[in-house]
Image (cartoon, rainbow, N blue to C red; front, side):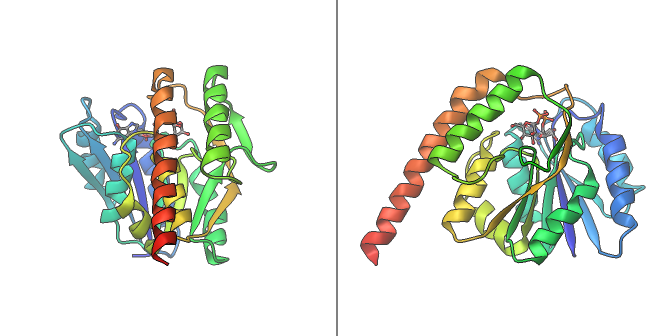
Length: 243
Ligand SMILES: Nc1nc2c(ncn2[C@@H]2O[C@H](COP(=O)(O)OP(=O)(O)O[C@H]3O[C@H](CO)[C@@H](O)[C@H](O)[C@@H]3O)[C@@H](O)[C@H]2O)c(=O)[nH]1
């Protein structure tokens, strides 16, 4: 399998159908073999039924489901570890980053990066429909803190469009534990600590107002950042004292 596309989905029946048809048509028009894995955990709407029906029509589309809702991080991790592709990409169910932005990410991998991440905040990025002001403030705030304490040099850790080589996906996700939104920065921080090269790539992106992220989740994001920094520091100190 050359490419695995992982899509975390929670209560996405209202919009995932067109996204899947579009993604499938894009990938089927290319020579590379592919699989699309939709990872649902406990949706209370018709997401699973809808994707199951589409899977009978679109070869290579599969749905993984589990009863309890654990969060986007858990779903992406599960998909990344079950996938068989040499390249593993995850994308949001609303297609907020157009699927043709895959090509610049593949280019970055072919040039030697282990992980290529879509970015909304580079000079060449194009944000076609921005998020509301409080989401932009949230995103910039988290990114500022993350850049300072965890991932210097990466300006957008949270864009939901990231491609990994199989080795990078398997090593980093196997070490991850964060189930919620902060999984993005956990996987990047662990990847860097393990020596994998990350390249940030400008992409086109547009907001869909029907977001599941809530401002009240912000303190938990910061707690994750600091906890992760402590863990990585301790591992570095242990590695230093053993060498
Ligand atoms: N399986 C599963 N999927 C989830 C869950 N929560 C969210 N998702 C999936 O995660 C994707 C993003 O969720 P949205 O609700 O569309 O979030 P957003 O706010 O519009 O997304 C932006 O901010 C997020 C948080 O920073 C980013 O993770 C995301 O990529 C994007 O930048 C969607 O495919 C959604 O179904 C969950 O509990 N379980």
